[in-house]
Length: 466
Image (spheres, helix red, strand yellow):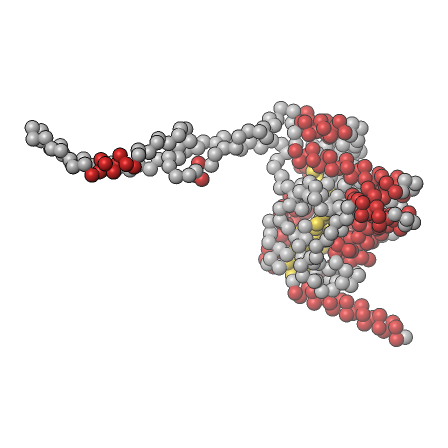
């Protein structure tokens, strides 16, 4: 009888700690569940996922705004309104967005799918969906303490007419460069598909609800548990992934510790020593929880037997493919797409790469060896005109002699009128520059970095964008 009472007291204290943390900072959450799609089969679980997440976030001290089955205009309006609310709360605000529903990639861009979408061709998606980059740009434009975006949106492509010309899952996004303080979590790794689930909630949301309620657990450790739980629940078919540039500690429940401690990234050799001699299942649990490329590399070299060896190799191969694809899209030139096609001639991204290679074929490639223009405003003293060298100054000794020599007057000529001082005219240097020319796709904000594994390992270094 005593133990249940003590357990209840601990739970109550945990909730109070969560509320105390919330009082120290503003916490706002936007929770969206998209189930009732009109032109395609409905998804049973997103509305349930959104409801359960809203409950947990409310218990954690968040002021929650919930919405379900949004059209494109409604989805855009909700994001804009949420950003305005974050701005009104002030810079000491944690802003969290949870989205459950369909998501897909077109030409290396990720899109969240509103319920009123009805595309007839691939080109309709950008017009009818909501681009993930636009959402991220909107949220990062508002001063806030931290931004947390949770996407349970990597389900299968539901549009048969375009499914053969788009890549699987979502494209890689990384938030390392640019505005710090952002965590972006996908329900599965880039280029893979997530499962909707059979028990009322998706595997990702189920794992997140459990790990998020652990008292005092930092969010990075929570996502390590989410990765392992989802991987085990789906028998290796799905492994969540996230990228983080958080600079402050965050816990759903419990008091935050302030600045986030530095994390040391292990090398492949260090992982090999740690895994050596362990049972294969224990070793697999370690690398899935960590989520880093180095951990997977070490595991693949030590454990080749099925089923865990081939699963890890598949994850690693897909990771390298998505890195190559991300680099090609960032560079966005015909040679970059040809390089990708040479490495992956028969991938699910082949059609898209061929299309983008043709589209950028006549795009001029910047000359990396070209001489940078001189900044005239920063030139040294003297004439600023860049067209010629300044004239040599007269010797100082000659000037001195001329200055001391007395002036001679001729009696047979009247003295000339006094000369007016030379009027000093400041030169204006006009440097004409050609207007900038942008080629499709439009310029993006790049948030580079590796971010290919979990927070504790693979999401540091490398390249990425959003």
